[in-house]
Length: 267
Length: 329
View (cartoon, rainbow over the protein chains, first blue to last red):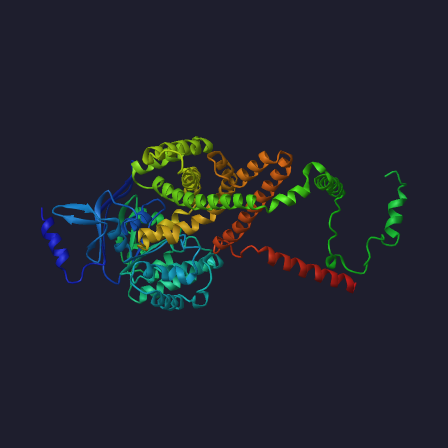
């Protein structure tokens, strides 16, 4: 039982991992969605998660920011446990308020954008820093304008989300996530709801983030994009990590039959 | 049909039929002639005649006594009643909606006790007729008053009567609000449920505080579907205020009733007075509804529906263009 020892080591490390997933199990009824996931992401690393639909990729992302609670196992971001606290040898659930505060440090970009339709683009981006008490309204608006410029939508600040194309909406959603200056951003199939000709503009924004040193975890089906931006590719099937490694290895010389089958289907 | 076979040929060679005024225009440049609908014209004519008959009857039938209607319409007694109706309706609408929001939030909360209490409340007040609630409250308060004051009748009667009036207003408002809250709860709950799950998730993922999520993200979107349903409810409420007459409050209907027992000959014009005032009240509510709905449609539709003024202006402009075009031809 070297648990205590290892734990001490992880916490005392000068630069903690950006993300650590430890033995996460998640099931709905009898259906096991995640079946013992272990994953470590270093700061600044770009991790792409691949896998067939229903393999548990999205659930893993949602467990990371505690939109879903894992049945067993735990997640820490920047060395801080998410959704739970250590109490002696046990894990205790945190209050809702604390969990919300933790989530505000983890960016999340949804497949279906989920912008707030009744707020202007500017307010969508500026809402969270104001609501969480980090910035004044004016400062948040200024930051929002800056971020909208960065995703190439500086001229759309006054528009409502439904007046934008899917690609533009997703870029606003990315700006909205960035407004909280998160240490890590999770992307849940960010281009799957887009028309093919709009995919590129969103991927370009994500690539820009990747090269600027933000820690990213991206669930996607864009294999070409994975090859281009990923430091590491993780292949998940049946709620387990089948294999992981640099894109050159996992995508071009997969060691596992299931990875090969999957790549043969999507490429 | 029974024409000789040569007819078709001769028709083809004959000059173009008179309906086609610009034979030189190629087909592609021509406007499609709208389909003629003679049936619609006939039905329209019949309906217009019926409407005219009804209007004629309304105006000329001495039974309605329009002169008496004019006499009563703005009488202080009627206006006082109208004021009571407005007061009761407005207070109950606000209190009912607030109660409804609380009940809906309780119903959707994680606590089984809150859910059960909310469900039971809604079940109870939707099951008991409003008139029963009102008369129950009336008797309850009368009992309470006697017990608390214990003052005999006599010289104090006048003051008693005045405080009595205030209490009647309170009873009416409480009764209507209790009833309204039960219905509003379901309207609000339906509205909250109609908000996309992704909105809750996005708000949670951004770490927005719980109260902010409800006030700024979920509820404003819920209002879009709450508004038409709640206005429906409000119109019902305005009419339900006529029941407060039975707890001896002289609202619009009460005023009209008491006047018609004093002037039995004017029953019909007095009822007409009440009818017209109720029509005015519900119409005002509908106008407010239009603008409130338009406000909460921001972002939900790409372009907002035009206001009546905008529509009228666009219609006039269209008409002017058409006249100008036809004048030019």
